[in-house]
Length: 638
Ligand code: ADP
Image (tube, rainbow, N blue to C red; front, side, top):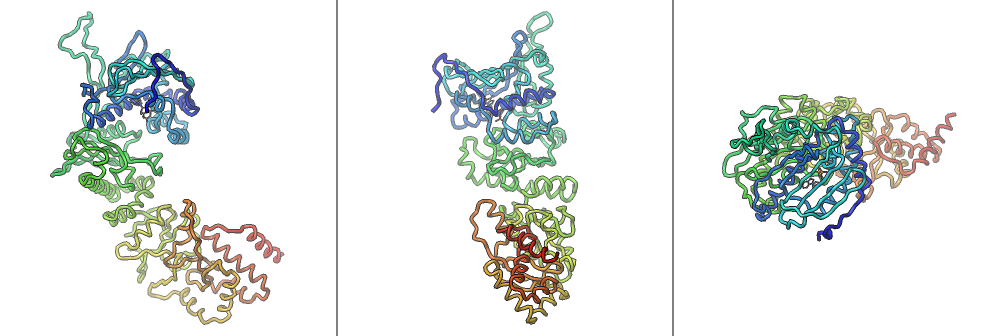
């Protein structure tokens, strides 16, 4: 229930601590780009109009007889005020307190974290973080807000006022028209913002493509003698206020597309690429979709929604989540349907078949856009991959229908790329050794961990390429993509290796020969006894050339890296037991064969096990004992 303020009761309230911090920051550090306050306040006004349009779809009365939505800039040179008004949705008392007295915490924190100290960059970011309203205080020493919610009676208006110094007041007022007026009492020296030409320039620069008219008083209405000219309109519309996406492609330049993107889709940099098309037929729609050149700050936020807006016949309906699959959540833009009914509810829309058709169409267009980059513009594709690669990797997991198409776009690091993610699955297959029929990979938490892993030794020796997968999503990706182009994907840290590359390499042969070596068999048995429940099995390895031992998982087990990810995500995991593989030719294993002292045998076995665990990025259960054992051995060398 909305809290009501008693008539004429004025309350003074303190800002939240963080709000004050943001305020100070905005005022002091963004001064060299002060004109951005116009963009921020006009953009809020335009959002308020969008919200009203949507709400009015189910309740026409909210228009109160005035359906012409506008943003109006008014100056009063005597009072030295600039007022930005809208006839949008307006706010209730509670909403005013909530929206103008507090800031969403996550947004504030992220905003502080992303400050670069470079004023021009920082000022660009401000609108993305939900702190735009406060930009008014850059040029004003007092801000007055008068607002009234659409559909409510005129007595329910609210006046909010603050000098930006830790406090604000709030009181009830009567407001005849719905919507919001933001009145900026300009600071000394900010008179430029009382000049019509200056304001018009700023609007052209920042708000040209908003599809709501931004109007100002027509200065030509009155001639130099003070006579009114009858043929001049009272007001002029400053911006072009057309839905850019409805224009034909050949009428638009790249600058038009880029400006539209920056002005309406809340980014401060040009996009990386865009696609614009009209789909005809019995489900007609227009798409204008962009791939940004930089990942948004909340790309990994589970709650974050995509920046695609749905319009029906030029009317804004909703923004967000359901319009793009999660793996394309970085895409921004507009989908405008000519076929959906205007008076549909959000809930219905989300289940509508026609929406599914729109989504599928949008996904197709974006995938072709990315394919185009990968074929024709490798430099841009690299930028794309660096920003969004790990997100696109969710594609084969989420979108079964487009799995193969997405798989072709993926890039990986491998034992042949020095950490760069440049190998495609197709190029991997091209480089396979004769007789090789699998795509080998190793997962791990970081390139540095995997690149020298003992699991790779035999592959390096034979010159077989191994994909090194270190993105978080990779474990899921390989589970959902058991094969590509008829070749199965195989972890080099799992199962019994069968490197069937035609010539049986010496490492494999040795492993086979060793099967009948009796002293070796008894060492294996003894190690098993020593390590006991820590390992499922001890066996001779065909993977190792230099290291004495390594751990592997059973073919169908989860694998150590995946287990660690699940644990880190708070999943209770029954620890699986690894297989301990030893390199029969290694001097340390030979040494074990000859060891007669049981204690030393045990120490050495444990050390080998613990080393193997460490070298695949695992954690020791009891590091102190490990250090103690190691020191004991080192001391025996002294
Ligand atoms: P953001 O717009 O990024 O959420 P702001 O600080 O600019 O952050 O605004 C905070 C909130 O105040 C908005 O989300 C909106 O709910 C409300 N608001 C601001 N200006 C208006 C307006 N002109 N009409 C209605 N609500 C507004």
